[in-house]
Amino acid sequence: MKPMANLTAHITLLMFVIAVVDSQSAKSTEQLIAGKNPTDSTHIARGTVFSFEHQSLAIYPGTTRTITVYIPAQYEGKKPACVYVGLDALLFEAPKVFDKLIHNGEMPVTIAIGVSPGTVASSQPTEKPRYNRSHEFDGLNDSFARFLITEIFPAVEQRKTPQGLSILLSKDPNDRCAAGASTGGICAFTLAWERPDQFRRVYSAIGTFVGMRGGDRYPVLVRKTEPKPIRIFLQDGENDQWMGGPEVGDWWMSNVTLQRSLDFAGYDHNHEWGKGAHDLEHPTAVFPEAMRFIWKDWPKPLEAQISKSQNVTLKRCLDLSSSWERVPGTGNACDQLVGKHNGEVFFKDKIKKTVIKIGLDNTITTNQIPLFEKVFCFGKHGEIIQSEKLNANCLTMTHADRIYALEEDTGSLWLIEPDGTHTVLDNELDSPAALAISPDGSWLNVLEKESHWGYTYRLKKDGTTEYKQRFFWAHAPDWAQGSGASQLCYDRSGYAYLASFMGIQIFDHNGRSRAILTMPQPVSSASSVCFGGKDMNVLYAISDGKIYRRKMKNAGVHAIQKPIRIPDQGPG
Image (tube, rainbow, N blue to C red):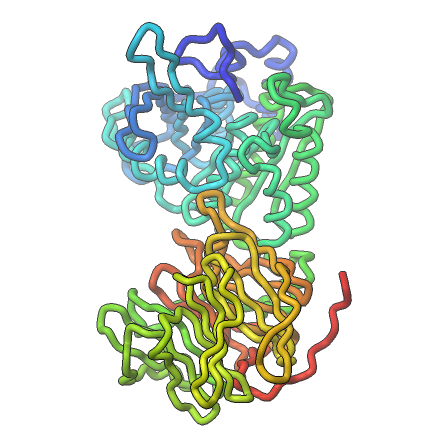
């Protein structure tokens, strides 16, 4: 949102609503605070509040902002307290609400940190300051989460409470909550969505889940993505519409759409809809009940509700009892998974400069593979296949002993015949990085790393291709120009699994990304994927140099195997 013209460089859009909530709202808030445990407010110990200025030198260089910290009266400085992050500031009369809820035992002892958006101040009389609010809060990435973790939390812990106590903040994501209004509301959601390893409780009021910076994509991503261990409370009103930007979307409908997506995906969530506009009256009145919901049954850990998701593709492909686990003994510098049709899995160790095998009994064995720097695959008899003539970044061999190869630097797709003849099939691709053949042996598929796109080609009897079409569409994260496609494999039902920046994207027969498996945090992207295991139903993936695996419902299939008939999913 653009700042109002009459505000100074140190005041941002929503700050005008912080100081004033009308008497009717204050009265309703007081009633909701009392809630199930009415208490004489004169007997409630009050927390203390202090503030300081923070200047960022790293993630948001040159920005300054005010940090406001609330310390509850019950905090003793002996063990870490739960953490509440307020976007823009400590809105919703938070200190007053926390005093009563903590006193009544309806939420844990919690230190609240209000974080105003950053501003790069003017250096010359004629220079306009730069307001960072939308950049920091509306973006669909983990930058603000990293800013809190690496800059703000340490800055708070370096200080003492007004009583001289050390400030200890819990590092357990189950103990952390984020809340905000408008652009701060979507930021609170993004903190938990991008980094559930750091934040798991969310209150979003009049959130801007619209086309500011891609927030309108959230409802679809929530439906497609494997559920995360987060709890959400949404608030909005039928007359919500920020008058400075109706062209970017419908505030009210976007919140309703997100709520329906959360319900579809099986999240532990709640909402409160009203008649209000884009202001803090209703969000403030609802806040006490939202906090009761957010903190209910604490300290019981929040868990992902995968079994409650209505995503058909997830349920058809994923063993719902499974989760990612590290493959022991594989190190932290793994690259290029290569599956063998018997279920053995190989990978490169970039530090040891060797190839390592994960056996069917999970034993780890070092293998001497020639030309370590080049990619490889296996033939029908277990022989190592490499290309010395091409600078290939991807290879696959078919049941007919034909090899298909990609060259990312030239944008080329190659056919290598059994007699060694090389034929270029396409040289107009943009960063081709993932290659696989459908289980029925009919279609060759290539996805590009630096775009959303993937192409499909029908294979002719002589191994050449026809009917090239831009067919696949992959999701890409906010920070990337493309999907980061890096490897593709199939299961026996014809679902395609793509290692990408978003994690493992699962595609249907018609080239649509229908489900997304997220990788363990803090890095959510995957750089390699293949099937393996005795029954070929274990999905292996590399993320941040580490190998993970999990059980799937469907067994995988390799191009070297005899083509099989797969069920038709229809035209969709």
